[in-house]
Image 1 (cartoon, rainbow, N blue to C red):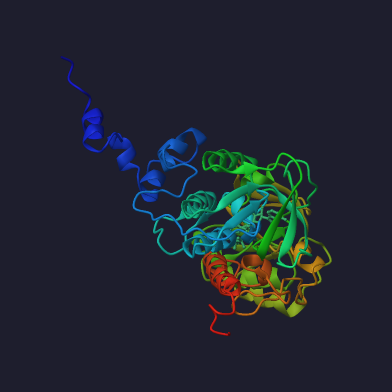
Image 2 (image 1 turned 135 degrees about the vertical axis):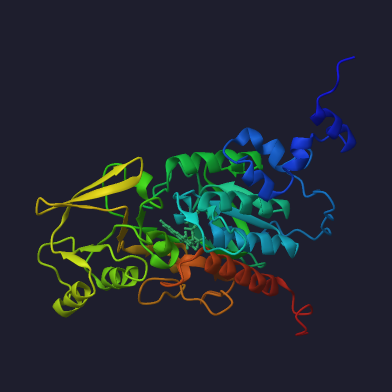
Length: 408
Ligand SMILES: Cc1cc2nc3c(=O)[nH]c(=O)nc-3n(C[C@H](O)[C@H](O)[C@H](O)COP(=O)(O)OP(=O)(O)OC[C@H]3O[C@@H](n4cnc5c(N)ncnc54)[C@H](O)[C@@H]3O)c2cc1C
């Protein structure tokens, strides 16, 4: 008789699951084994019997609730803020749809190294995949598509009606993130049962949570998308640490660029500020102060960003010189994706971000917001996840009836 391979023996001892499947049963193990890149791993990700149901090992089924034809909460945006909200809502037994058009900041190639629980860092896209898996585990319904309209539901039950268009056909000026990352996420989401909108649909929701993020205007150059999050950055809180001891260029001459150049001196003494224009508008005394602290200030444009496979090597400058650099920080303008909220009358601040109270309520009853779309500062994964979880808790409270709230 042929001896059985070791993994078969292990499988029979574990109720039919192979040793490899058992070994990959935790997200950490799956990440370590790099099981995320291909959708065909969906069986391993969730276990075929579990896919599309709430019946995960040891997980109770939720109590039946009367249906109004509306989902409890529509979460617009499947980045860290939206996914965190969906997990929280699911764990409060609220029905939740996450609509995402795959065009967020978390779809670039950065590795998040400042988020609790990942000592070696985690790629922004891996975190999304884990978040999707976790949200689906608690019942979230993934919908691929772009929410293009949001209006009040005129029915007595109130709430909202959202129009979702297929992401491929609807127009957007949002930067999509790296196409490879998008494809990988779409395959993964499909394995989790995502329903990608093939035609325009409407969905009714008792509440809506906007977690739509912002769009960065990174400089345009050939191969730019491979550089974003690898050698092209905008925030030293996120990526300053990686500049330690390296050649770094800051491109821009606004307040943000100058602050970034000063801040980078805490990490490296090899900082060059390229103003991006010959006749700079930066205050002369600030440029002098930078030079006094050892920053090389170049009052010229960038003629070319020279990189290999996304790794920056040097900048060709408009004055025919060039400089070596390993990383570039740009002061890229940001536009918060607030259209859906603004059309409903939600207030925005001077910089164009949605105004929310400390619990994520916008000025429109029933409409909540979280993450980068709500503030011009603290654009961090942890802050977005916190905002999403907090707003979801407020959504849950909003959905209680007056008796449950102790008001009647
Ligand atoms: C290059 C780079 C490096 C970074 N490095 C770090 C780091 O090291 N550490 C850190 O903490 N943070 C880092 N950040 C910031 C971090 O990525 C953001 O703070 C975080 O992604 C914000 O999460 P969010 O959910 O608010 O928005 P996003 O991640 O942008 O997600 C928003 C989602 O909403 C979707 N969406 C928007 N509008 C619609 C619509 N109408 N219909 C359907 N879907 C919609 C988008 O497709 C997107 O998926 C970095 C960002 C960049 C660009």
